Amino acid sequence: MLNAHEVLNGYANGVFPMAEPSEDNVIYWYEPELRGIILPSEFNCPKNLRKEYNRGKFQYFINKDFESTMRSCANREETWISEEIIEVYSGLKSMGYGFSFEVWQGDVMVGGLYGIAMGKVFFGESMFHSVTNASKLALVFLMEWMVKFGFQILDCQFITEHLKQFGAKEISQADYLEILKKNI
Image (tube, rainbow, N blue to C red; front, side):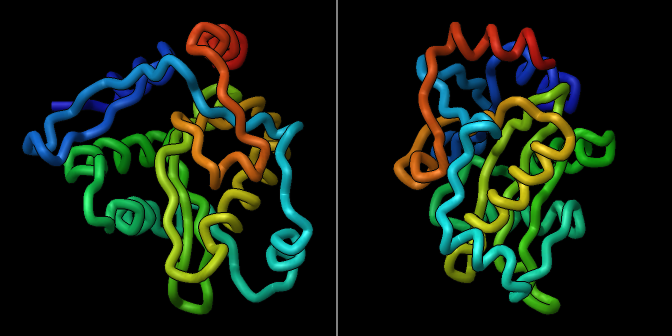
């Protein structure tokens, strides 16, 4: 059974857990050769997204409904977010490490992301949206928070085309481990 201390130790050592749905949600530890990251100083927010963020159409909350954020992220055809992962990360939230950045429209959460904050690193886990751009807006909200509190790196784990538009890049695992040493 996975526990909170194992997860924190894993992150501090450059690995992260994911459940394998095809193997009855067995938890495996991953250490990619190339790591996707975003440096807050290099974050690129497209102008139209910044306008939408500032327009006031949505409300932004941290940890208003952490577990629902995780469950919304898991609500896809195939997911690495098992019940065991939800339980452990909810415990990490109770311990002050887990954070969800949520986008609400009235009484409905329409987008968000969650992850773990440790030292000056935010370890992003997953994001979701039910309204266009809501996950992107959650990322903008997260980045503002990271800058405000002096965070140095957003660990995206794996890079995607979606994240590249925001300044995400790949670095070697060796370089990533050096960054971790300086910021945890």
